Every structure is written in structure tokens, then in C-alpha cells.
Length: 423
Image (cartoon, rainbow, N blue to C red; front, side, top):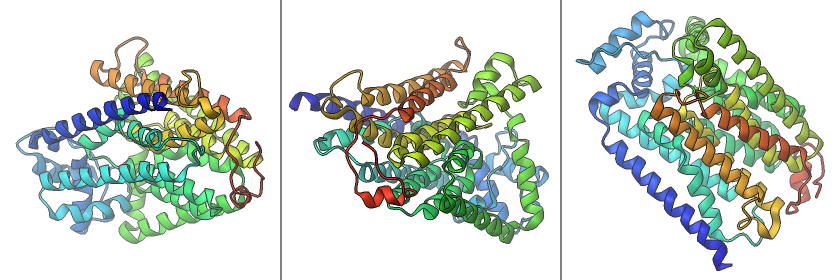
């Protein structure tokens, strides 16, 4: 058993070293770089809402002067606020602080949220009884050490909100609270990153459980009502308009979703957008199938939800390296599912499901890192999209299999739509 702990210690050591490196890089971010970070757009949105801009919150003519004033003397073009009105309301308190201070506080809050999401995943999954605690710690450490954590931390991005929503939804579903879990997932995605949830929504539709659908609808209605209360119909219309145009604003080849692969091969033209739309539809169809698999057999929830999250990222029309953190808690869930299938050899065999999950996560991180370094010019263009496709393929194969697993209480199986656990 001591031999099986050595790889875990190595994983924890490497992950800790990476996290320390990310923190050191974050401390070196200058005021100039803060002015060019994604957080500047959030700060503009929160400030405009605080100053009473509602119907014109998404007006470029209104946003641009404030953005220029914030980053002066830098003359970088306006980075528009494209998140939901609810996101503007959440970031509003930070706008009482100077930009540099607000950036630091917001970065730490998002990192804390990501750590919480991963910690909850470690505590929520069903580990085989013989799983050493050091391997549970290793699962959490490697999930946190991904490439997305660095870019999220440096950009002070929102995606940990979705990561936390995913694990909270998973916890609710495992306890039989189907409507609550779906509502939490929709709200967390809708706060700032609705475009990342296309595959997850397809997964819920494929599940075809009325309580899940009802919870998702309730969450969406709640978001719309809050948004209307914050900015009115004109503001909501402005958000829809700016969101629709966001995919044509930046280079497709810089994105980690599969549209990045298409963009790096064919450019930013209409053909690329049409191909990307077709790929998104295919990914969503696969996510529907995964939801259907859970409807037939509730024991497949862990691996199917993990696969749906990967497919959702593939399907997104707009995703960057920081968005990879939405997969961090899913890595933990996938590792636990792999351990249940592999039995006693889970943590030592290089061909075990655990090793495949770790390998897929390492591949995604390495691909995103290469893309960031070489600008996605390394043949065959954007690599992260290909790595995500490999991970999605593995998840589809695993979802279709009937592997060994640790039995769960029957009350949990019944809670997931009344389908009993299969072994």
C-alpha cells in the first residue's frame, strides 16, 4: 500500500508547485496589466449599474469613456462588459474600491470559490472504501493545478461560479433533490457564463425528468425576473444583443472550445461559424444521449455529468483557457468514478480508468498551455479543442459501459428518478 501512495505524493508535490507558481505570477501583475485584464470589463459593468445606468448598461458609447478613464494613460480599446445584469450587481460592491485593489480582492474571491468547489467534490463523491486519503487529496490537488486556474486567477474571471454550481447541483442530485440541483446549475451558469452551459442544458433535456426540467425552468425564470428588476426590458435587450455579437468580436483561433480548432484552420469567416455551429449541435446531441443514459441507469450520473461538462465546453461559441476551471470539480468526480470501476488496481495500473482521467486532464492542460505560448499556430492549429474532444470521447465510452462500482444507498438511487442502481 505504501507503494501506491508514492504517485499520490508526487502528484500533490507537482500540483502544489504549480499553484505556488500561479500565485507568484499573480503577485507580479502590474497596474498596466490589471487595466488589460478581463476584470476591467466587470468593474465597468458594476460601476455603470451603481451610477444608475440600466437601459444603456450595454451601450458601447457609455462603456468606452469609463473604460478609457480607468486604464489611462494606456490607450487599449474598450473591453466590453458582456455578462448578465446579475453579474453586474454582484461585482458592484467591489467598485467602491480602486481598480487595482478591487482586482486583487476579486481574484482571491474567485480562487476561494474554486477551492471550495473542488473541496466539496472531494467530500461528495463515493470513494471506494479502501481509497487512501492521500489519493483523495491528490485528486483535489491535480484538479486545482490545471492551466485554467492560472489564467482565471490572473484575469480575475467568473468561471469558478459555474464550477461551484456544478458541484452543488451534483450534491443535490445525489441526495434526491432534483429540482434544486437543476435550478442551482442554471442560476450559476446564467450569472456570468450562460454560453458555457449549452451542453449541460442538453444533458438536462436528455435526462427527461420532470423535476429536473421544472427546476431548470424555475432557475431561468428567476434570473430573467431579477435581470428585469435590475435593468428593465431595454437593458435585457442590450445584453442579448451584445452576447449575440460576442463571437465575432475576437479571433476564433484563441478559443479553447472546438470553434478554436475551426478558426485556426479556416479563419474567422462565415464558413468557420457554420462549421462551429454544426460541431456545437453534435456535442449537444452527445450530451442529450448522456442525459438519457442517466435516465436509464442512475449509477451513470457521475461519469455522464463529467462528460456533459466537457461536451458543454466543446460546444461553447466563446471559451478561453480560464473557462477550463469549470472542469476542476468534474475531474474529482471522474477520478472517483474511475476508482469505483477499477477496484483494487485503481491507483497503480497505468491503464486503469483513473489513469485515463488523469491523462485526459493532463492532455487538456498541456494543450492549453502550448496554445497560449505559440498562439495556436502549432499544427494542427488550436490543440485544446482536440484535447477536449479526446476527453469527451473517453467519457462517452465510459458512459456506455457497465463497470464495477461501489454500491450506494438505495435512497440515493431512488432519488435520481426512481431508477435503482445497477452493478
